[in-house]
Amino acid sequence: MDIPLFPEQPEIVSNRAKWNARLALLLSAPLNWLPPSMIEKIFSRLTRRYPAASNEQVQVIRDAVCTVSMRCRSQGGCLRRSLAVVVATWLKRRSVSWCTGYALEPFRAHAWVELNSIPVGEPDEISLYTKVISVSIYDEEKLQK
Image 1: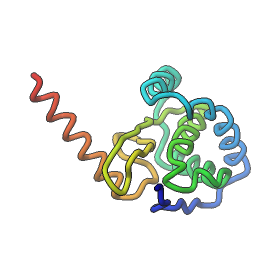
Image 2: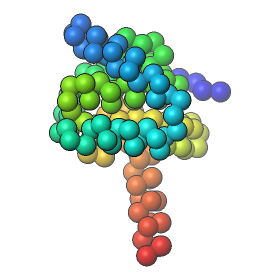
Image 3: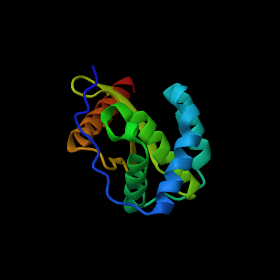
């Protein structure tokens, strides 16, 4: 059972940002059914030549996506929201990292966007969760060497 623990409270955004978000939602819809590894390959090819977006730009895009789509306003819509944010930043010729992970209660599976390894617009619990993932992956690589 997915409970929307962290409902989105989007800020007011411009009409231009809303139209960009609508277009991004349409373009990102087919990605919802692909495995995460394929999504990462597609996004890395699309965004590798663009500079990173600023935190403010990503937050405005995220708010626009949440304003346009009711499905993207809860934890259950995290995949749709994060994919649309990456596509919308790509439409603006910028890049942002797309991440997905799995954790125990209360998060289960979750997807988010990051700038400089910091989740944008996510609650503090996600930031702590991503730090744990980074440390555990680093420890495993260190042990294998």
